[in-house]
Length: 175
Ligand SMILES: Cc1cc2nc3c(=O)[nH]c(=O)nc-3n(C[C@H](O)[C@H](O)[C@H](O)COP(=O)(O)O)c2cc1C
Image (cartoon, rainbow, N blue to C red; front, side):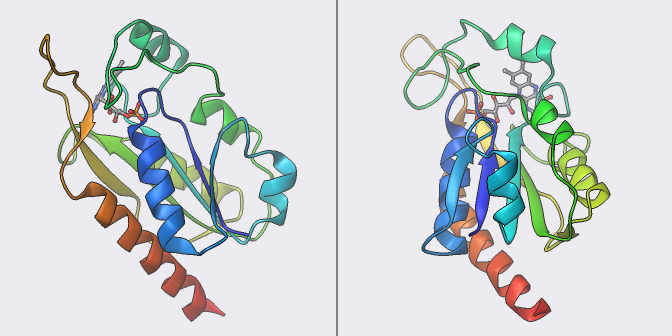
């Protein structure tokens, strides 16, 4: 099975993860950090991991806390802090020769190295072969009284699905 595991406070990284999973394969699953247990990871063939960029890197306890009670995202939701951070999930990642890739969601362009490079470095340190360079997907942050901020930019879900297909092709070429 192929797994796309994500941290997502406002739903955007979750939506990108679902689109990547749809591109990867029919039975690929997009899972929260709580759902992506050690046992599932050990059985997986491809593991793609993604998180939002907070303060130019992976969310920390402090950045997650600062997002609490700030409504954002398509559903104007409060930050969902009910799952492990990607940072904590990565500390328990089982070692082993697996295939993988890393992504993040961010405001625009290359602002530092984002979360995806930090995720990719941990995947490699745990024995993963990376199927592609770390990838960023773009959110807009305009917030007004009538429209919440942190919404995926147009076309990002199509790009995410295509990237999932690309990762699958890369995996097939390695066999
Ligand atoms: C506390 C905080 C810090 C952020 N810092 C950055 C940043 O440094 N660079 C950036 O591109 N986006 C930054 N963002 C915007 C997030 O990347 C955006 O909220 C995220 O991609 C939305 O994903 P989600 O809906 O899955 O939580 C920040 C957001 C929050 C809440």
